[in-house]
Amino acid sequence: MSDWDPDLYHRFRSYRDEAFEAILTRLAPGDAGERPAGRIVDLGCGTGENTAELARRFAGAATVGIDSSAAMIDRALKLREGLEPALRDRLSFVLGDIREFNARHEHPGEHSMIFSNAALQWLTEHREIFIRCFEALAPGGRLVVQMPANDHETAQVTLDAMAHEEPWRARLDGVRSPSSTVAAPEAYHRMLGEIGFAGVDCHYHTFHHPMASPAEIVEWCRATVLRRYLDPLDPEARAPFVAALTARLESAYATRGPLTFNFRRLFIWAHRPAD
Image (cartoon, rainbow, N blue to C red):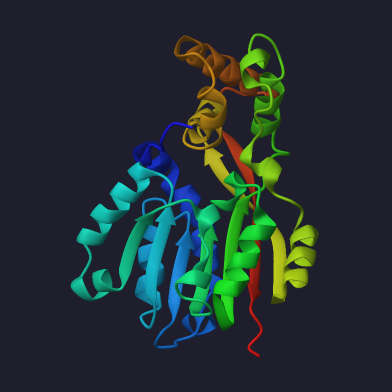
């Protein structure tokens, strides 16, 4: 896919931040441990604001954010430069593929927390990633993951249906939403237990976002999921696709005006046993 647009992504930042705020409410500093050699990694850090906040709250750990988007990492590095020196010294950002995260070779068993917010849904190798996370965690270290799981919602259902219709089908054959890679909570509960995690808690939470119109929901999607559908299309076909999607959503939601966009997310909490 084409690279991310940080400005477009942050247009709905207050809504996207609600999941992170929910995590912070539950995640007390002591939960992540205060070991002198403790480390925190943010897999899919984006523009780095969440990573910086984790570093600020967990002062005993070196914190690194990893993302595959050069545009996002560039923005994160600019954010880092504006931070106070003590925080900046404990915080770093790395351009890289989070599928290749494997701390066994660098800091095996030293991570006090592995965190990922709205990133792993873009990947399919969840078991392999969680195995690497388990091996990277110190005893008692925490795994905290959030993934959108909204493929049942009207906008996503409509988008997937359009991709299977003419004149789009030829170019969009096989394209699926990122949420289609996200399994049910009980599947992750079983998977993480098999890997060796303890204290596993996997659950859905639906956030309710007021939107001015279905067209605004399309703008929300343009920053993330819609990229996967627009990139394969010829440039001249992208605007008609967006226009058709907007019209479809106006019909599906039965309004051109204000509505509530219900967005379901999956939260995963677990830890490596202390022994």
